[in-house]
Amino acid sequence: MNDTASPRQQPIVFLGKRQQGGGYGKQPGRSDDFLTLVEPGTPCGELMRRYWHPVGISAKVTSDPAKVRILGEDLILFRDGKGRAGLLHEHCAHRGSSLYYGKVEDDGIRCCYHGWLFAVDGACVEQPCEPGGGQHRDKCRQPWYPVEERYGLVFAYMGPLDAMPPLPHYDVLEELGPDEELQQEDKSFYIGGGTTAENPVAPYSWLQNFENVMDPFHVVILHSRFSGVQFRQQMAVMPNVEWELCDHGVMYRSVRKTESGVLTRITQTLLPNVRIVPSIELTPGKGREVAWLVPVDSHHHRSFGVARVPKNEEPLYSRRSRMATHEGKTWWEMSEQEHKQFPDDYEAQSSQGSIPAHSDEHLATSDKGVVMLRRLLTRQIRAIQEGAVPEGTGPESQRVIVRAGNYFE
Ligand code: FES
Ligand SMILES: [Fe+2]
Image 1 (tube, rainbow, N blue to C red):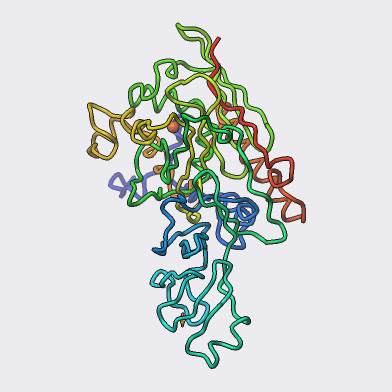
Image 2: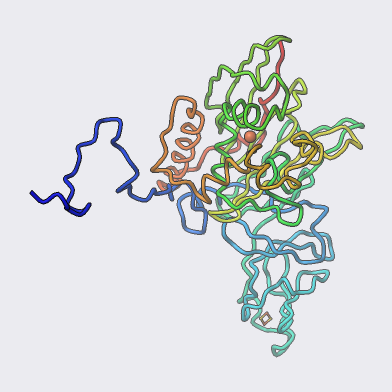
């Protein structure tokens, strides 16, 4: 018998049940392209293009052309000399120079290369190098998107023009009292860091942030046990949760028995990417913030929000950033080691990957809201593919009654 056999020749040892299931041989995980990809022509990209999305804060949209990337498209946002906001494809319809270098005039934006002038609706109004100022200029149109301004935000519609719904109204953002105002934010009011005013883009899919809104249990683990109590002590209590479909979205009711009574917290999502999270400072009553998780492309997203606040109050964003401090440091001031010690939404969500490997997931009872959201989105994408109108774009959905809020008994 040869007892000097190399390890290769060693007989395979039968593993007991507990030792099975090692990582060897695992196939790479796959993400769900149907639900996450948003570029033109993708199933979810088509869904996204049936709704209005914020693309800028009105006060920041000026005659200085700005680059914005939305749904995987590179665009230029500006305000012409007559005060109209415009959103055009970045590359000039003539020979492709970027309109970022263009000059804004009363009637539109003029490309720096040969001076073609485009109005906010893409019409080519001047071609100074062409005979007669461009006798055929009406044959060329810069790709453009309709925009509308409301609540201090510029909204764009990037879908088929014959399917354009009216821009919805939200009851909590209307009929302000004399001592109230709307505060706008172009990064998340509360995303737990990761983004800055200079770079408001989070490097992962919009969907994982949207799913997080329907995930009430992470509040107890991530925001309370791991990172210390970041919101209010009552939120550290494990809640009883019920999810339901409501209007054109999913919402949940989380009920907590606390020392000061029963707290019912309702959080709401609306198709396709609207989140209404009631005050994390537990201000009683209806939630007064509406936010949109806007896909920059399939692997990046940003957030725009509007909050109804008392006049002259400290901006909500800076107040929230301070709420989540650890030993006096905000997210941006913390070291890598401190982020490991006190992970936040950004660490939890970005570490899922720029798009998670959905085939590797093991969804559980507490993920019911995530599953409901995915099914709701899937139904709408299929509806569009079958030629139907997705929920949330009909006349009945143009006045949104917010249900989210903190209710105490
Ligand atoms: S490339 Fe824009 S005018 Fe020629
Ligand atoms: Fe969170």
